[in-house]
Image (cartoon, rainbow, N blue to C red; front, side, top):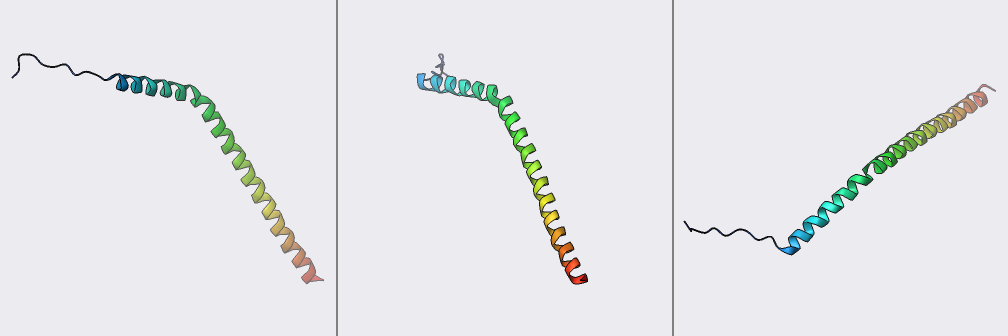
Length: 74
């Protein structure tokens, strides 16, 4: 065994990359509440559109069926 152990040296590029990654993470975490709010709003709007489309389609089909029945009854 060697009497002196060499301490690992961290390169300046690695330190710079580490600081940049930490900063990026902090920025992403700061924007998370806004992103979550947008996602929630988007899901709400999607659900409303789907409900509207179902109601419109069902009304359209009902209209066709009722019109067909009233024509057949005449």
